[in-house]
Image 1 (cartoon, rainbow, N blue to C red):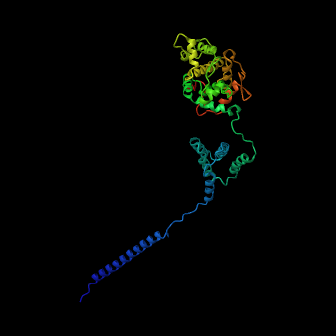
Image 2: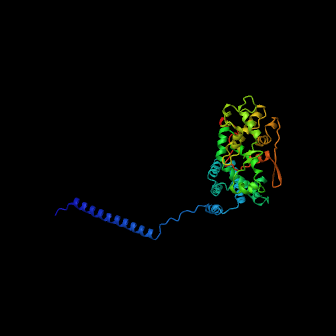
Image 3: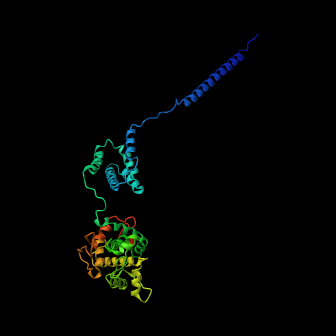
Length: 376
């Protein structure tokens, strides 16, 4: 019998191939089964690598984990330390410093801002100069024994009546802003002379304060010697009106302002009184005040003695009147003496302290210029 070697070889190849496939599938089955049980038994769980800074991250979490501080003094101290850290960081990494400061100014979230500093400090631990500068301020702030006082450094702002005034003037923000847009006199400057006039009336010993100013949180409207919430005298109001029309006056503001105080009736005295003593609408009180300030500013500017950046001088001259407004090189701060809790203050000083105190800044911030900012 003749043997077909080709056929035998082919059969053997098929046998080996089949056997090989069986082994391969068996191995695949083994690995799949093993993997299944490994997963079930958590044999394959990846324990992960522990970051070598894990302890530092925990310290940051413990340090800034929760904000439990309610004491405003402590919050202010934290904020001071934070700003110091940003300032120090700016010497080394200005870009990171700007990012952190910008984030805080937009979010006002001190906890997160402190964590941002903590993240930076992770990479600055070996910088001895940087760490020393951070600790110097913080240690001095915490242990130097400095007396920290509650309230404002401006004593008259610590009286309860000041809080009532702030609530009252906030109600007039729309009117004050409207007058500011008409006259291009900074709203905060208008409020500065309002403060000087009102704070002496916000006196808990006064019957008017007890009856309606305090309880209702409203501004006091004068109607006898001075008029309105800004205390405009009749003679002063008449001078302001004339100055608007008189092109030859040193107080003249220009054509655009000439019609601002035009009367609608023939009885100007009665209409003026009603304008300024309106209990519900203080628009004209603010308008007369703003024009008064601006006319004085223009007078001094034309004489070569600009005082547009001197709110204390503008307030003093507002208080003492046009007749005392004589431009000179060294004007003095003063005006009426106002007694607050048995302590004397001048009208000009009160206006100055308010203007630069930061109080009511959210409502009445600084403009780029106190006057004519549309042209700046």
